[in-house]
Picture 1 (cartoon, rainbow, N blue to C red):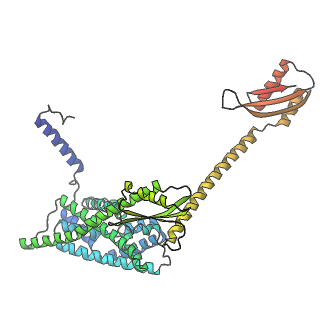
Picture 2: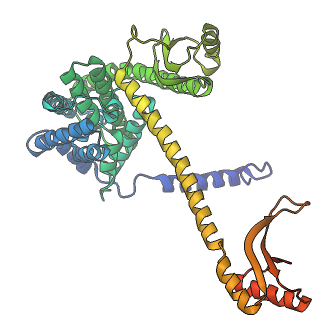
Picture 3: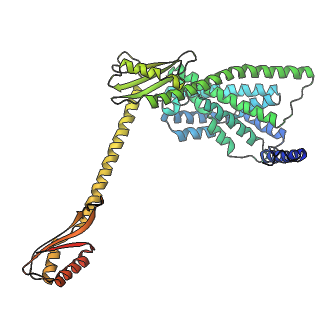
Length: 464
């Protein structure tokens, strides 16, 4: 390339690099159409407060999201996330840290606490009075956060604050961020955990909400610092220093545990993916089947449980499976195989029923598909047979008018196999018996009539 040429003068190299730098800065600049700081701060500050219409909107959105989780409707959950005003105080925390505004941080945290309390109370009340108590897939998906949730929340927060800092507001960004970061469904799932007394659901869902909130606030803080927003001025340097120390102490108190928990989420996600690969690749048996598996991560010793039906797996086969764990990164993992009688085992009956039902449905669909193919083939064969059937009686009567001395007549389409080819050929086979011997000219006349009448080019005429 031009930049790597050693014979190129140093000044020219510098000039090329400068032009490339200018081009990149111009292309990725955030200064274009940037709103003034006061306008952005005022806009975010307005969204912090939870009173009046914001509070009622939150309550209605929580009811909608809870119903969506209860009936397993993705569309309803998305609608609730579009209505939700939860992004306001979360972005307010990040903005307050970015401009060293302790009052804004306190106000944002206070309103976020009110919003979380109202959300949990509303969702708990709904699930207490709801006649449906089965945890559907949409609800279960919010009980175990993964590393991808943190990435989505972080990049969603970046998109939200960048769009909010523009003079011309991008109207489709904030709704998109609200859907992607999914702040409301975890709170509703936590309310379900409280209503049903399931501490695991509550802890997992609330932890997902907390991680999403921290990532959005962190993204807001980074963009505010990147855009160079001015720090809030205080009457004295001592007050300013005390405020900064307070803010950064609070940030560290939140950030350090979140970093550790985020690291555990990464390890948990990696473990679950490795367990899925192991089950997919190594647990394919001829006379038995894995109907479900549970991958439980623990930093001391993880656990992989297989629930199987069919012929029991011999102990040496189980030992062989255990020996295959290390190549998948499952060295510190205990493999438990559940098979045979389950009377003394703690089996998730609902999950077992669901798995078996899905397998029966898949098998039924494959059987139906094969039968449909057979029916289509038979239908095509029947149609072909009907179209290829010859009107032998009509042909005999017409031939009798042409050759009154005909005594016996038949015609049929037949397959002819060549000794030097595996591909069959079709020929019209015609047999006729006459009371007298015909001349070659008469035979030719009969053959031409048959070709015209039956629209077949290949005709084999046998005459007696």
